[in-house]
Image (cartoon, rainbow, N blue to C red; front, side):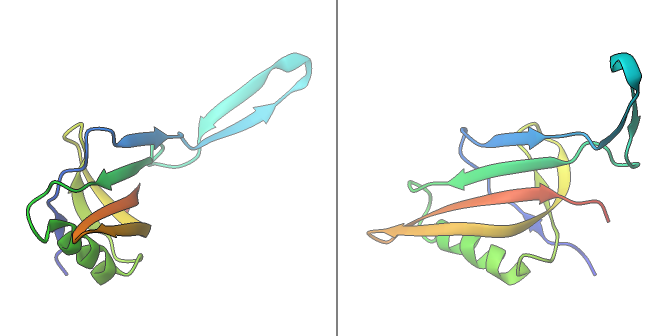
Length: 112
């Protein structure tokens, strides 16, 4: 099955968090050994916001795209650093103000 592409660009204030998967073994006298936990060490999580001021219906289209993937189906997305990622959105919020929809979501990178 072909993955769909999420083609909307988030607001400039979108934020990424990364925490490499590392195993740490501590020895006496403060020494420690660190090794990578898996093949895909750096996983990105992005807090993205799509605010009003977009073309008519765009906020609703974003919301429907996320609903369609049900928090479990991954999709392709290009982050603000222009890196192509496979992500899931497990949760999001939508706010409507006079017909304009603002969507906030967390995109979690997955490796499949």
